[in-house]
Length: 300
Length: 231
Image (cartoon, rainbow over all chains, first blue to last red; front, side, top):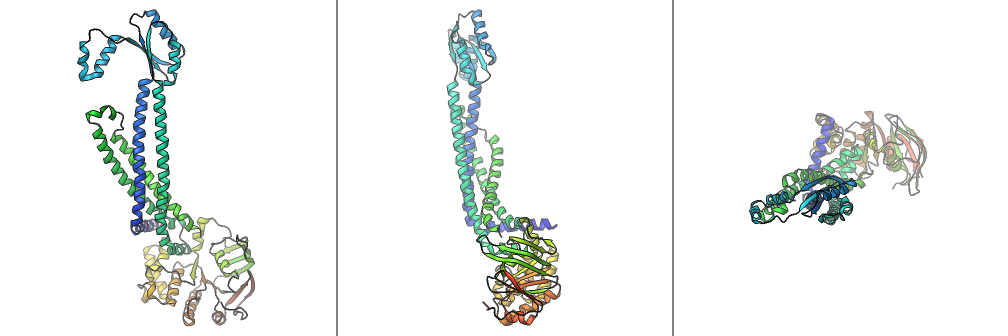
């Protein structure tokens, strides 16, 4: 074993000794880190699911549906198309006849589609679908065509979009603010735990300095102690989120809530991120907490 | 080995601990540092150990300028200087052997080297039989001998002793002085701060006397001036 390896193994040994010596207070650190990560997990799931809703809504609402009168002339239709295209805010214009619209509706209703068979007359209108480059253009485009002949109704949903985005932002900022505060609290708790080991080993640290131990050698065991606490917290919360969310997801996937589950992040996709994020944050809180607690003791 | 050139130290609170110190200690010397409490002995030692930086002047250790060095280099400087304190500073939960081995472990010494050197220094301080005792089972003089063993186990060229006999009765103090003399004979430079008049007088070594932050006397084979009261 080289000198470096021996030093490293000493540091690691001391670190685990510290974990064991402080197991009671360590429990407080682990609990606080677990709490932070669990809340972070919930916030993450909320944000990701909301993001899905926003994305889906964006896709669904980044178009303006122009319902046309049944007796519209092709000249009128061309005029509408020309005006709408003039501002260069469209991706595409599609015409959907009333028959196509009915067919689509039948498909959408699935098993219940046969209910539509009984209709005597197709009540749906012809539709021009104006796909927007961005949802924000909706109002402009609508204004440019609303006074033209042959239009029955124009439908677009800019308001909903705006509110949804705003709501998502609130959740995101609020959630992250809470998580940030909790992270600071855990760093504080962990640094106090580590301070116990540091104080218990004050004499040893003092001697180590006089014999020429590097700061890294002195600091190392405490960083390891903190990181071990952080990782234990991370493992507990990863397991908790994994089982908890799986359970919730499956329960929600019961037929009744099928519409709702579409927007939920699938647990499998989530877990990979959760493992990486939780491990990093857990270890980070642990390391930072111990560095904070060591700062005062190294100035000799 | 140790060299101070026009060194002054003023603490941040305005206390002028040392002014214009010039001192040159050669390899293999045994030097007593005497003077009343608060004269500046501790500050001088702290400057050598890089616990404090001087306000003025230059300090050389082993021909290396250590006046201003980066913090992360300080541990490596300290490996050249063994230190012994009045209060021993042993680890109570480690045996004599472990206390000494500890000094080697932290610098990453090879286990084989540890197994060879620790018994060697323990026999030098005549503690081979107590290797597996804990500090609370030892007498004051034995405590200090363990501390000395720990200070020299990495073979530093310089040994600094800060009132090593301050807590010991006269007989035990002499025991410690014999150990230090042996170590000095093997070539280690020793700087010892002390208030023990009889020891200084009997040893007939170089004496550097500090008062109010300046060196007022520096003589070969000196004695402890009698007008200075023991404290």
